[in-house]
Length: 94
Image 1 (cartoon, one colour):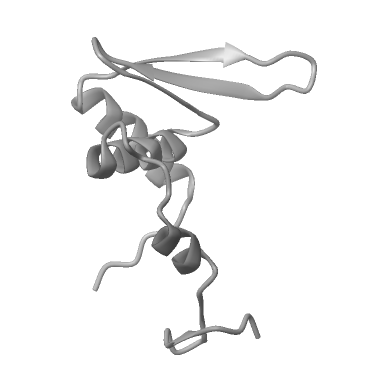
Image 2: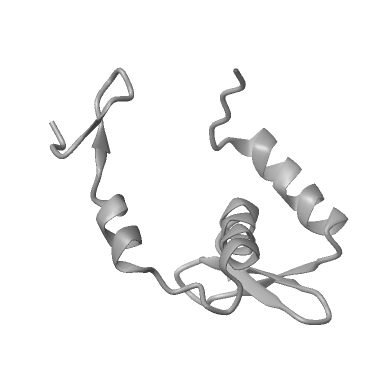
């Protein structure tokens, strides 16, 4: 089983994956608070996020749902589920 976590190495891989998928990447300076916004564009799409991993997440949502990406009632309920240390789902956050 592979386990991945967010880290600098995976962020570099995420940039490479976006380029492999045909996206051009550039950074927009968001002003005095030193936030940056990464923009990934191709001929039909523009995705914006604070990291390449965020953009890959947006791309995954778009690929799975298309333009009808808004959450369903089931999606909202699933978001409130929690898992214990043994990865059993539970309705409690303890």
